[in-house]
Every structure is written in structure tokens, then in C-alpha cells.
Length: 186
Image (cartoon, rainbow, N blue to C red):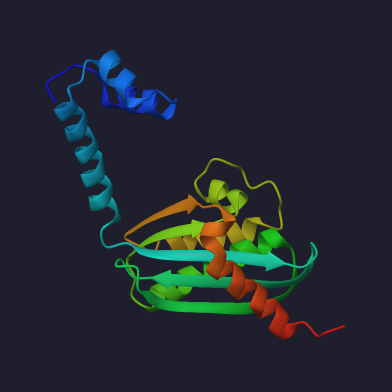
């Protein structure tokens, strides 16, 4: 790019809300340099995401604890459906259901010979614990965390990302349907 400014400084300024005209001015970037920078980042993420299957997982609980279900949706790298499942889990907490959904999805992905996986979950707790940003403080969650970590190590590459609930709606629906199908009507 021909300038000494760190790419990290540029993206930090963008993340902090600096608009593009002021960014170009502050870092003395031409339009071509800015385009080159964005292309470099796009290529980086394309390489990183290429060949990754996507696993959307969600656990649901009616009451905490209460009747619970797990839902998973597994897509190939082109976004085509490989598998989807909902499973009734019995009486448990929402956090346990979230972990069980993740573990169920990882095991299914391995059975289908998936080697690279991008996990999407709407449980910030599970995502942050598995990414090492939160400690596992609840003793009853530790075995699930350990099993999830063990399953993740079976993949050549993996990433875990938090998504808003609306971006995980299919897995959420499968988890809730699993509860509906096993919970007697009152």
C-alpha cells in the first residue's frame, strides 16, 4: 500500500465510527489505496471461510429449569442444507440446553466428515466461554464445556461466533418444536 500506517490503526478508526472521507484524510489514503485495503480484507476472510461448513445451534427451555430442546442446522460451504435436527432434552436449564445443542451439532458434523466448521450460536455465554473470554463459573456447566472443547478439537479448523437470535431462527424453531412434540398438553 506504500504508507507506514498500521492496518490495525485504520480498522480501529473505522470501528470507532470514523467515516470514510475523514479516514482517508487522517491516514492520507487515496481511493485506490482504500479499495486495495478493503480487497485485502475481503480476500483474507474469503480464504478463511472457504471450505467451512456452518453450524447454527440453539437450545431452548420453558422454565429454567424446564422442558428443553436442542435445534441444529448444518450447511455446506455453499450454504446448502446438509442436515437439520431438533431433539427433546428433558428437564434442564437453558444454558445446559445451549451446550447440548452445540455438542449434538458438532457430533453430527463429524459423522458427516466435516473437517472445517464455523459455529453460530445466540448464547453469548456459551460463545464467550468457548472462546476463552468468560470463565466457566457454574460447576454443572463444566462437563458440557469440556465435552464441547473435546469435540471442537476433532476439526482441522473451527470458529465460534455469536449471532443475534433472529439470525438463528431456524435452529431456535427446531429446538422449540422438539419441546412441543415431547411436552404433553395441559
